[in-house]
Image 1 (spheres, rainbow, N blue to C red):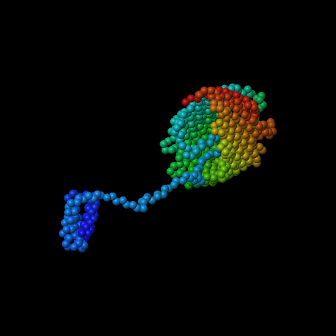
Image 2: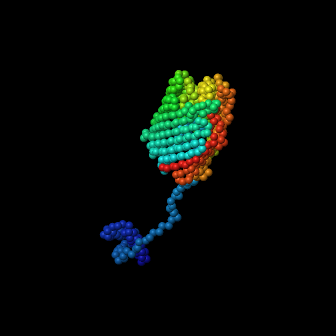
Image 3: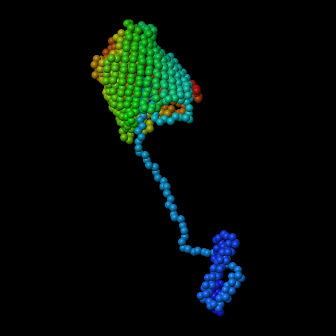
Length: 600
């Protein structure tokens, strides 16, 4: 009986296990009900075979039928009450993602760029007081101002003062500031003192037009007319009887200048700026001078540091003097100036020659200059050996000495100069320039009073002479509120071959100018001139030196309204009637006042 019970329990345990497996398969497989039923029967039959086989080993044959019956009853009568079980897996392993390293951006100071980019600025000589007008400085990489457009301003200035002085000035501008700019200027000044025939008048008309073409070319046209009327009042003795018509001299100049230049270097790396000028100079005695000048400089950039320059200069002049007898004078000058220029941020070296033809006389002149900037400073040292001609003509001689008389010939002055100098800036406000030169001059014009009455000057040409020249400049500027410029030139003339003195040449010249704006609507200007006396002699006086001259001028302009200003100008405050040229004293104290009207 016990065996029977054990067998029954064993069969029951196996049946439960088989039922659990069947229930588990029902969850995992999505099959139809009929298929699951067939699968269950197969599993049941299989279990039966297994149990039967086991029972054959452990149960006696006498009880075989009973076991089968009991098993069949159990399978048929007992339903499958087994429920799905949840399996909980417990493990010490915990899955985790690997830590990702992040790039940390640490703030650091920028690396200082100590490289230097070589940029060359072509700046002309900044001498302050020359008779010519230097070309405009064009800074590199200058951006166009698109915020404020070009404004055409018009200005009229009139005034009067003592010495029967009348002054008038007008300035007018036209154009859009991009494609064209045109300015017109006219001014007139006249004065008369109590001294007989000491009176002067000047009229100037000036027209300047600049046109920009679409192909980066800039055309410049400049035309002007000026007329000067004065009287040779410096005769001695003063008891001589002259009428004003006999002393009157009027000089008129008509000029036309045309120029062309490329605003940017072309594809071939070439810069050019040809200029053609024509001047006609006449007087009230029907004498005339025609002067044609051509200048054609060309520059070719070979590398970033090396360039080649070539300049052609042609100056042709013809003078027709209506004297007794009449004279016709021709004076021509031609020159070629090839040069190689080596430029670095701190060194500029110019090596060239200037072959020249003074009429029919050939001369080979040097053109060697060097400039070096001191390290970590704004100071430059310069040295050079240069040669050139000063072209003398009737117009230039009258501009230098307005009292010259008739002449029979005109010679050009050949100059060879050796110099050393230093220039630079100090801080944000100070600039300076100094130069020491040793100069050799051939055919330098000198001036002596004539032997008749001294009212005219005879032009003498010194074949050879030397000069030691010391020149210095100083400037101080504070924005637009204050500027001060000063210049001094000392020249010692020596080694003259014919004349005993440098007649009419000034040994010392000092000039200073100040512009000050203490408030917005007030502007004050002052000018100071000092001239050392030049050497002279006449038919009745031995060799002498003129007294030095000191001249101080002060003026101011004040804005009364938006378009209206008043101005005051006082000249020769010391009332020093010094003589720049022997027997010709300057005007004494002169005061003028007037108004300025501006409009757009």
